[in-house]
Image 1 (cartoon, rainbow, N blue to C red):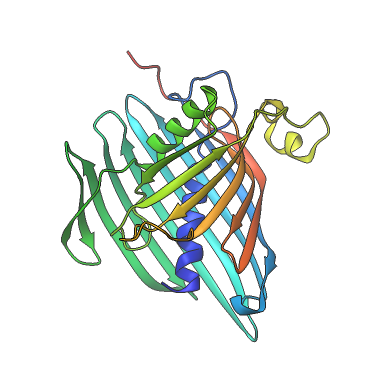
Image 2: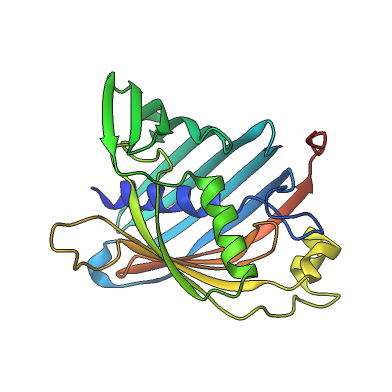
Length: 275
């Protein structure tokens, strides 16, 4: 897996986690919204080959537990590697039905405005396994261990935080990269903290909801190995609100670290209440 591919996969996962904002709704009634995250390189070793990075994610979340959840986001970045600049553009659309445990996904990745990869398919958890039906790049059926899809994983994370759990492990499938594997995640949830006060830049961007309490969360992502003993592919730390928004992102790849700040936020029309 190339550095660029790894960056895109991680940022896809990070964006998926940022799927709501703190309100009085329950975790299963996430708030439809559009959010913008500005990204920059925080730190990098000489071995990373990366001298700079600037980017932006535009993320849109809609739906309900009755009708399913849709996510549309676009992540554009400039990756500086010495004398070269690589422009990447990832466009992703997903639909998840939590009640039936099914997931549909389409991802198109562009490099320097040329289509690099298109992945399209669906996935379903049955009684014993996760079955992925790929349409692109080639038709294929892949069977994996059962895994949570992104919104179900987010709801699980919020419920664990609300119940006071501080660490737990789960498996997630988000259809990113080649959609041919799921990742094991270890979540560490800190004590709930007070939100920022009036006058904080993020309160001005997001509104009164930013003042709500949040949990500091860290997620480590692992590929499955036969030995079971491996280092994480990457780690994501963020501030998680009760409705799922993640702000103040830190994405640590070991050799380089990216940070993301929310720079725009809009509440979208809510879905009708479930019967």
